[in-house]
Amino acid sequence: MLAGGGPIDRAAFSPGGRWLAAVGILDADAYDDTSPELIVGPADGSTAPWPLAPALDRPVGAWNDTDMHGWMANSRVTPVWVDEATIAAVVTDRGRATPWRFAVDPDTGRPTGQPEPLARDGIDVYSLAGTASPAVSRDRRVTAVACIGSGPMDLVTVPLDAPVVPRRRTTMGGRWASGFEWPEMQEVEAPGEGGPIHTWIASPPGAGDKALPTVVDVHGGPLGAWAPAPHVEVVLLCARGYRVVLPNIRGSTSYGSDWIRPLFGNWGVTDAADVHAALDHAVALGLADPDRLGALGLSYGGFMVNWLVGTTDRFKAAVSVAGVSNQVSAWADGDAGVDFNRWAKLGAPLDDEGMEKLWRQSPLSNVANVRTPLLMLQGEEDRRCKASDNVQLFTALRVLGRTVEFVLYPEESHVYFTTGRPDRRLDHMNRMLDCFDRYLE
Image 1 (cartoon, rainbow, N blue to C red):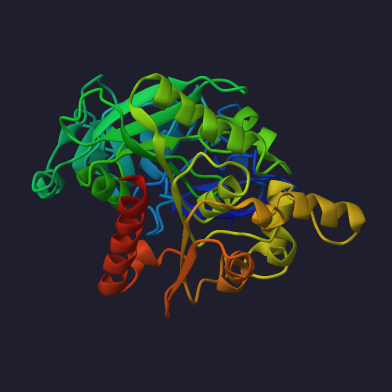
Image 2 (cartoon, rainbow, N blue to C red):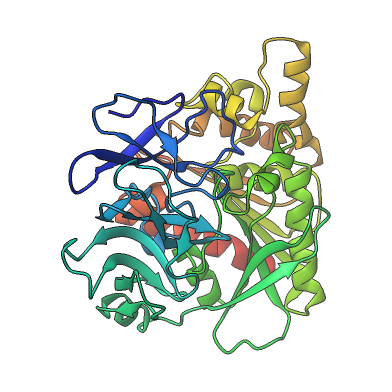
């Protein structure tokens, strides 16, 4: 067994059964700027485990967000022992989840070199498995289910010992995507006050460089990151004629602890500044029409939408999905509130200072300033960001006479729009599209 201070899971035995590799955090007092590491220890639990790459500063596992690779379906993938001296694991770096090779001394379980990426571009891995026996040295490789480029998943093999391009083994995902007008994905660096903001801009195919109505989409987490492949909402928005700006703002994972730390206890400040900066860059490039801007986001992204509509009038419409409006009440309500707040250093309502800190980071505190038409979508059985929280914002906006609609989907959870009943998922997508059509056209 492996015993550490923090959470440890995704364990895998070495071929001989002497060692266990796993993904975990060894520091019991870690905060969100501590990335999950690849750790190794004796399988009998005789000593504490150790990290194989303590200086990596990137999360082990698939920590990026796209439903093209099933990101809500237990995607924090298990490391793979290729042989007694080699472990393959997925590492997320700059929004891409790719396979890396870690070298291990079979006798001591200690690292024997720096980890190396087996592929940086072209694939985005969901799951990983070894495909060759340790006795086979001429064809050592791992097999991955991965998005290819900006498209959906296919089966891919990645060699461990030769600089060969990953090889596609199936074409099912590509064939499925070929039936749609797939977005064109452009990768840019938007100037920001904290440094360049890695951003994808999704465009309708053939749109060229003309300014289009544009939606900025903020990912959840905030320890998430947009991936090279768009999610279904982006595909639908682009098919409807919109551009979508997908920024990995400060607080996003896969860019190192220094990119996460500025968000600690500072929600609505550094993150909002980066959202605006990414949009400003799209406008400056001539791609986004500044008079037809919308905002979209799930979970933490829903918080960001709720915050933005109360702090700026630049958006013509906004769609908040399972967001947060009152950080004070959310602290004790939900399946992760108290621990989540500690890890993110949001604060705790246990004294006046903590109450003020949480209220300052609450979109509800800005409700009187909201003038943007807002559509709020929510699973009624959401235990992460509960419906009761968003009822507060909805009620306040109705009392103020503002344009707001709140839709509850019965029996559905936090991510109902990717895992819920198909009719409700369709309803979600249609309402989202209709909202932007009504106000951005």
